Length: 278
Image (cartoon, rainbow, N blue to C red; front, side, top):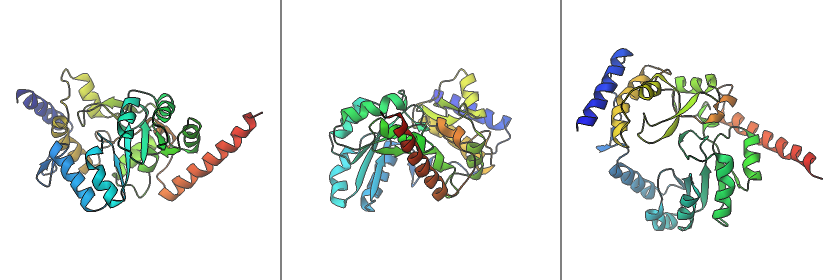
């Protein structure tokens, strides 16, 4: 379609300007299926069922159609939501955990801030445990989420900076170098609004008169650019996704150290809270 052609031309102009060579680096098809397509997601779900994955977290949409198979396999099922109405919908399928993820979070998130979203989801879903998410990078955030009624916290960005995480070295360093002001909400990578570390790519789309295409088409536009930037270690173009808690990350460390610091900080926060009780 003409719109796609114009967007692809924009991406190529960007790559030429930044001296990026695409080559054979496009990740937009896997197993013969377009990434982010309905068919791709359904194929992924089939693998999860066949492999009897012990824990599955749905980040986009409801896992309802697969619940019978998950229950048969003993899979624990979680769903990430960004609104009370979505929480009510997934609560009706009797899943195990609901993650209330606020606007502070990295990646696809909610228009509602975590502090407002978490208690409203807790109130709406009855006995189903809720995890708070969005901008939580240390034990103080865990304690805050639990004070709001959550059973715990879902933490992403802090563990992206772990030695064991699967993101690229230049993306881990971007987390260390970033601040709380270093992210933007952009549709320039996936086509859906997502919190990502600001880059030349996000700036280019913000300044252009073109509107990003919906998922999965924008991914076909951005994919070759992101893959080439990853290959070349270009943190200025593909620094990755991150939440607003990024400014609390000081170093790339083992996941065990990150986890233990979160535990100790949460314990200290709960202990300190006792001084406010009469």
